[in-house]
Image (cartoon, rainbow, N blue to C red; front, side, top):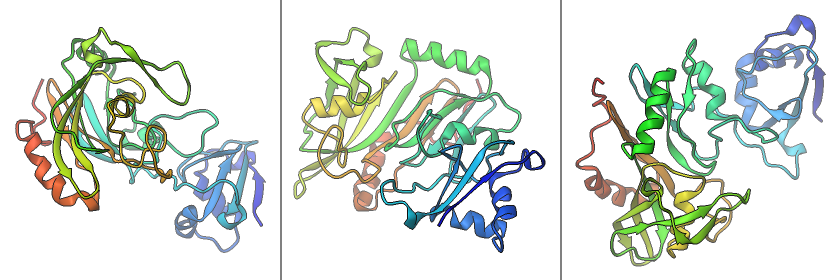
Length: 305
C-alpha cells in the first residue's frame, strides 16, 4: 500500500527526501534516498528528485514499485548523476544519461537536466544551448551567462559550432554520406523526412563510417551536424537506410529506453570537449574510433576566448 500526504505550512521548503523522513516512521534520509529506485514518489502527480523543495498544499504520493502494474518506475537522476565534462567562465558541458529529459516537460515523468542546473551551478542564470532526445546520451551544453548564450546562437547560425555524435546503425556504411533532406517537424511524435533539399547547409547531416561488423551487419559511424533539429540524426539515418540500433521509433526492435546514439563532441570558439559512450559490446571499435577525433582538441583544452 502506498501513502499520500499534504504538505503543511511548517514543512514549506523542505527537501522532498527530508519530508519523507518526517512522514515515514523508521525511514532515515539515507534509506529514503536508497529506496528511490524501488518506489514511485510524486508531487502533485509528477515525479520529482530527492532535492525538490516542497510547498504547502502540495500532495506527495509514496507508492512501492510493485503496486504499479502499468507504468514502470524510472530512476530519477540526482545532481551527482549528471556530471560536468568541461567548464570555463562562459560554458559548461554536461553528460546526460540516456533515459533522462534534457528539459522539464509538462505532464511528463522524470527529472531533467534543466531541473538539476540550480544544484550544479548555484546562483547562476544557466541557459541550455542544445537538447538531446530522451533515449540519447551524451553532451548537453549550457551557457553560464546571457552573453555566452547570444554568442552561441550567432555561431550556430554561421556554422561555426561543430557537434559530433557516435552511432551504431543497421547495414554497411561504406563511404561518407551528406544527407541534405529537409525535415517536417510539425508532427509531434515522429519527424517526417521530405523529398526536397534543405537550403540551409547548417541543417545538413554528415556521416563518416568508422567500423563495420559483418556478422551483425552494423556500422559504427561518426555523425557531424552544426545546428540540429528535433530527431534530425535519427530521421536522416533512417531515411538513408541505416536506422540507429535499438531505435524503435525510426527503426526496429523493442524499446529499451536508450539507443546507440551518443553526443560525444562539441567544438566552438574558446571551448572544446568530448565524451565517449559506455557501450561495452562495442568497446574495441570505440577505441579504434579515437582516430576519427585525432584532429579534435582534447577536452582539457578549453582555450581562452
